[in-house]
Length: 55
Image 1 (cartoon, rainbow, N blue to C red):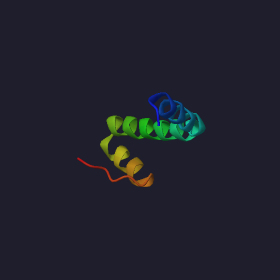
Image 2 (image 1 turned 90 degrees about the vertical axis):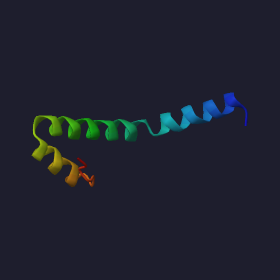
Image 3 (image 1 turned 45 degrees about the horizontal axis):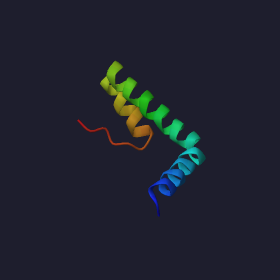
């Protein structure tokens, strides 16, 4: 494929998954904010979303 075709295909895929991308970013931002406020809350938030809190 040509570079322009690949770029267009990539942008189409991103557009189709935009809502999912925003949701993931929102959840990650909330979890990282919780961790800065209180490390214990951050660990709970990570564990409830299926993440393993790493230190």
